[in-house]
Length: 549
Ligand code: F6P
Image (spheres, rainbow, N blue to C red):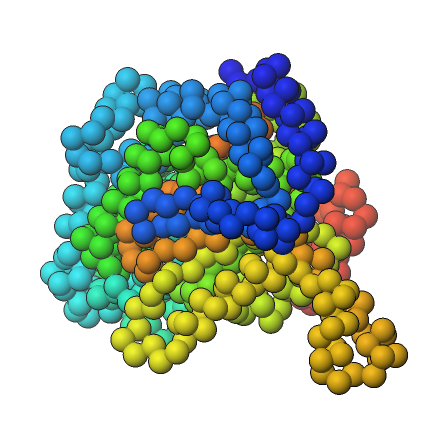
C-alpha cells in the first residue's frame, strides 16, 4: 500500500520552501539570464520534443521534484503495473493496457497468467474482420459496407472517435460515425442519410449494461429490422465488450464478438477491441503502427530514470503547478484541427483517473489537491474564444500546447507556418507578458495622446509568467498519436501515484447513474416524486407540464 511517508513530507516541504525562491524571478528574466534554459528544460524522444522551459521553475526545482517522485515510490509502482500486480486495489484488478500494445513474444501476466497470447488472438480476429469489411468480403444486405457506426460512450467512444478524426488522412476504409448521447437526436442525426443495407454497427461497451449505449443499440437494431428485415440483423452488427455472455444474450454470434478484459480500464481501451472502428478505417497495418507508437512510449517510461523520462517530467511539472503553485486547471491546446477531440479524450483520461479525494492506503482523505480541471479546444479557435482569460484573467491556468512540424496537406500554401507561429507566439506571450512601461511605449509609438495612454495602458498589461508546456512532433501519423496518448496515460499514472489515489476506478460516476434509474418512472409519470427534494421534484413536475403530461 502506498502511503505518505516522511520522505514525501520532506520532499513536499522542500518544494514549498523553494517556491518562494523561484517566485522572485519572473520567467522572462529567467530566460534572459540563462541562454541555455531551453536546452536545460526540454527533452526529446524519437520525433517528440517536450519543451517545459516556460514553467516557473529553475535549476533547483527539477531535482526536488525527482526526489518527490522517488519518495512517492513512482518507480516501484511503475514496476508493479508492468508486473501485472493488482494495483487497481478497489476493484482488485491488474492494470494492463500496456499489454494491449505488446509484441507477441512479450510477457504480461495478470493473476499469474500471460495475457499476451489472448491479446494477439483478438487483434488477429479484429484484423481479419477489418480486412473483410474493407474488401467487401464481409458485407451487409445490400453489398459492401460504406459506413460504420460505433455506438458507445465515455471510454468506448472518445478514443476511437478522437483517433478516427486525428488520422483521417490515413482512412481508406468505409466512413466512420459515432453515437454516444442517449439524446435520441444523436442517433437520428447520424442515421439520416445512411443506407441501412450498407451500414455496419459496432456496439462498444466494456460492461454491456451502460444505459445510453444499450438504448442506442436497441434503436439501431429497430432501424435495421424495419428497413432491412430481422433476418439481416446478424450481418449488420458486431460487439466489443468484456461481458461476452451479455453480448450473446443481445443476439450476436460468436464470430461478431470481440472481447477484452477487466484489466483494461474503459478510458484506456482504445488499444483493445474498442479500437475496431479505427482499425476498419485505417486498416490493420495503420492500427499496428498506432500500437507501436504507444509501445515505444511504454518502453521509454518503463526503462528511463525519472530524470530522463518524458511522462515522469510532465507529471511532476503538473504536480508542481497543482500542489505547490496551486493552479486549479490544465488547458489542452492541440493546434491541429484533426486533434479537435483530443481535449475531450484527455479530459476523461485525466479527470476520471485522478478526480479522486480518497487515498488508496487506509481510505483517508487526501491532503491538498489532486487532478486539475482539464479543458481545451484546437489552437487558433481557442485563441479567439477563451485565451483572453489565459492571458489576463485572475486565475493562472497552465496549458499544454501541441503542434506538428509538418502538415500532411500536399498543397499547404502558408497555412502550416502560420499555425506554428501562432502556437509559439501564444506560449511566448503567456511567458513574457507585457509590462505597463511596454504598454505605454507601444501606445506612444502609435501616436496616442498622453491622457489616452494613461487611460488605456493598464488594460494592455499582461502579467505573463504563465506556465506552458509545448509538445512538438514531426507529423500527426498513427505512430505519433500512439506515443502522445501513452505519454499522457503514464503522466497521469505518475501523478496518481504521488497523490496516493487509485487512478483506475471510477466510483464517482455511479451515484448519478443509480439516481437516473430511480427518477425515470417519475419523469414518465408512473411514480410520485414524494420524498424527493423540492428542486428535483419541482423540475420533474415542470418538465412533465412542458411535455403536456
Ligand atoms: O463514465 C463511466 C464509465 O464507466 C467509463 O469509465 C466508461 O468509459 C464508460 O462509462 C462506458 O462504459 P462501458 O464501456 O461499460 O459502456
